[in-house]
Length: 358
Image (cartoon, rainbow, N blue to C red; front, side, top):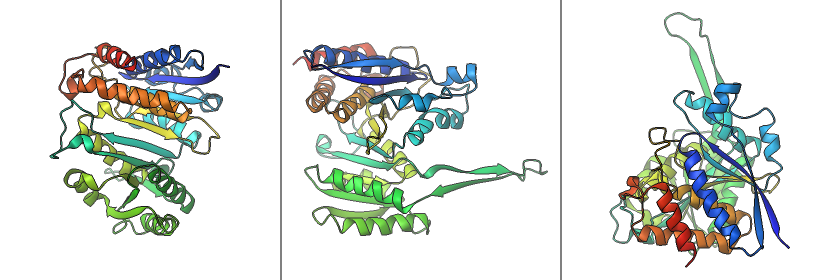
């Protein structure tokens, strides 16, 4: 009997449309090769900046509710010069993540073969760590406001509050420990700035200390975020699972991806661990409006995100095959300009599909 997976596909803005097309081409090939084991039922949604300019919102009024009926969400990118960044981000991506309680974001950092890495290490391809990002509260809680705009002499006041709850801290920290137990090296590194942020992040530290006692088989360490940034560059061998707040993990994951060669190769998953709602899968890079429509966007991050989606849907062999096909492709030197190559989006996508056949 054929298993049907309902996918909500949101290409979004800029190169999002191109890389999503590449990812869907790979998924279609995988479906065709499944011999009827499964199929994807794909619904496309035109939400994004163009939608905003026409309707005044980044997503339809019932958009988040509509997404609840799907097995997974495949997302391209958000951002357009015609729309303020905070409007586009909060209006679409964060609206979905918070509306569906996708509280765990994972961002693997992998050093692929054939790519020029930005790190001094004798064997960078041996490096492989994963950022676990608290994805529902922290610095991206959206609590605050702007007041006194009528005051003279530019005396307006803006307040932006970070919210840390014991519940939110515990569930992401526990998720990180459970993830560490699935890896060859069982280690979790917690990142805060609790010397300066003495309330929310001290709470995080206390929860980390408490939860860690339930995982005696997992090695732990704790760093302040500025020192952790240096560790990414100087001692990457010490990294395995790194758990941090919404903002800190966001920044550190970009650093990790840059060290690995480019944000264009970085995948991510916004996970609804409780399975009450669908999870959402997207590359780390933005909409890159400067190269949109030129056919040169790097599709690797989005295709690797599709592999994370396959894993979440229980298609473990297919997910592993996609990861391996990406490695074969980069090892063959078939890469885009941002990572030192000359291949375009279509050529890389076709090469990945060809390597899936091996």
